[in-house]
Each structure stands twice: as C-alpha cells, then as structure tokens.
Length: 499
Image (cartoon, rainbow, N blue to C red):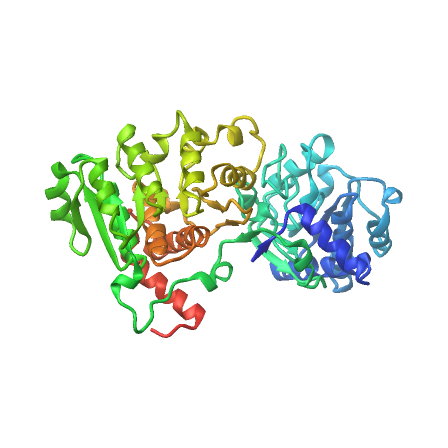
C-alpha cells in the first residue's frame, strides 16, 4: 500500500545495496520482470526495446537479452552511443550480444510490442529534441507499449507530463508504486500497473518511513468501525447536518442519508423553520430539528450526544454560515466543512484556520474540489503552479491544521502530521451533482462512530468510489447511499468479519 517518491525509491535501492545486494542484481531482476510482462502481453511477433542512457535503459537491455534467450525476435534502439553507458547500465548492455539500432523513429518499424525503457520515473525536466520526436512516434505507431517503471515523459513524483509522454497499455514498476502511478495525468498514461518484486526487502520501509499510501482497505483496516454485538445506536454517534433554506435543502438531505448509511447511530437535520415541512416530508429515519439562528444551533450542540457535524452543503455563503462553523468549532465537535462553508471563508481563510487552531484538536475535515481549493489555499495553488496535487494538499493540511481532502479522480487526503492517501478507485460517472454532499455525510458518519479524522476521510473516499462502481454508469447522487450496504459486505468479506 505504501507509495514512494522517486527520492524514497532511490533510497530503498541504496539501502538494499548497502545490505549486500549488488545493484546489478536488482537490475537483472527488474529486466526479467519486464520480459515476463512482455511475454504475457504478446505471444509472438517482433519486439522493439527503446532504451535510454540510465538505469531504465539498463533494465531494457536485460529484458531484451532475456526475451532473445527465450526465442523472441528482439531489437534495441539506444538513445546514446553504446560506449558512453556507465555503471550497471553498461554491464547490462554488455549482455546484449547484438547491434543496436539508431535512435530515429523509422527504426521502430512495425513491431508487435514496444518496450519503453527511455526515461522511467526520474525525469525532472521537459522532454525535447530527439527523445520528444521518438515518444511521439511511439505513440503514433499503433503497437502496444509496455513501460518500464513509468511511461517516459511522466514525472514520477508529481504525475505531470513533461512536454510529451508515452501512452502505455501496461507499466511494470518495482517494489512499490510511485505517486505518478496514481495521480493524474500520469495514471492515464500507465495502463495496467504491475508491481514486481526485485529483491528489495520490506524492512527498508522501517527506515524510509514513507508517509503516503494508496487509499485501499489495507491502509486503514485497523481503524474501520465494526458494530459490537452488544452495541446500540447511541454508541455509534449522532451526526448533525445543517440544512440550507427552502430552495436548497436537497444537498443537506444527501449528506444526512450518507451519514446514516455510513453507520452513524442517529442523524439529525438542523433545518430552518421555513424548510422544516419540506425536509420532514422527504426524510424518514433521519430526524429533523428546527434551527434558525446561531444561538439555537449552539443550544443544540449543548447536548454532547451530537458528536459530529456537517456544514456546507446548500448552507448558503455568508456570515451566518461562518458563524455556524465557529459555533461548531467552539463546541469541539467532529466537523466536516464542504461547499458553501468553504466558500464563506474565501475572503479570509486564515480566520478559519485560526479557529481550527484554537479548537486544539485535529478533528476537522475540509473537502474542497479543485475550484474551491485555491480560494482557501492560494499559496499552495497560485504561487506554485507546478507542484503536485499531493504536495499542495499536504501543505494545505499543515497550514490549516485540518485534514484536507482534495476531490477528483485522484482524490488526495492529507493530515497535518504529513500522512497522505491517494485514491484511484473512482469511476468517471461519480462526477455528478450531489456526489460530494454524500461524501461529506459518509465522512461525518464515520467520525460519529469515533474514527479519527484522517482515517474517516480516507475510508469515506474509498467507500464513495466503491459505491459508484457498485451503482454503475447512469449513477445519480441519490444512488450512492443505497448501495453502501453492498460495499460494506465486500469489506466485511475482505476483513474476514462475520455478518
């Protein structure tokens, strides 16, 4: 589940070599894994390896030699002069007993498979010149591409396209995924990702201590809430969702339904009196409470049983919403701030961050999308436009002292302590009106059950994506809470929990 930056991966290599495994042995294992993947992809026909001058190219030479030894027709196109290769890459090239082809697009020909061993994950500058033309020619060729470690042209840490990038059908990476395998646009260039064991022991992670994980159940299994046989609804928390006025009540109801389906024992909708009948008529298991003023909201929160709160969906932008947020923070409730609650602080985000700081507990989850994020965190977005999504969200969490969840097809959750998860399970049909409101409610439902904020946000994001997969194409937001029981059943099966 761990995700390593390119720097962390280099350190894993160094630690393994220092422990007695030669670097060339790692390269041999990597190249053999690439050859295995190539054999799986195409059963016959010529294979072209496009190799660079670094270790990625060395992996390509090992793969070429292995494929040739298995009787496959293989050629190698090399970016540089063969004699200019150094280190392990030079040793790998010596194992290739055949000539290399000139580095030009016509040399590609019409292969059954192209193995991209040009740059890999370490690229940190734009692709130009001959490599640029070669990558364009590979993409235009029509043959499937197998990428070594990462499609050439993708920055391994940010996932950015450095001018141009290979479009692979499969990528073989080593030991652990990199952020670019999960972040967009990098993930879209990778195709299927195969993680190969090349002899690096998992114990090196104890020294590296990576803080980023793929958002999968293994990352938060120990925090997942399971009802006790002797439990009752009051033990599972009571979430409050703040409703907007009569013309904007639907968002809050979506959140409330999400919180209830996520496992909160009780959920109450705090509704303006003018919208009370509308909300009450549309809800059954969710209770409705008349709350018009900030004072009434504070009185509601005097009851300690209301332990989690959602403010934002349909709440309206302005001073009243800001006051509601300050009230919930003063009451030290677990709090999810979404939509209008975030926009209400766009002119003075530091007021929100200071209020969170004064609440003296990282119990707050902020859930912006890419349009809302720069309104709160202009320093992370506008002044550093080339920073990765992961870096921006991690900085935002440290600045706000809240758990920050930046929504999208590669949703990132980050905690003020530096931990982060990247989700890759959201299908495209999840991009629909109201889906974010349901997500806010799911997170609040988990918070109500006592799940810590970072874990609640990560679990909520994963379950949200899986619910969309369960519902399938044609999904609307109302479907998401209704398919959560199927997601729970799958999780229970994975975790070995009886139900």
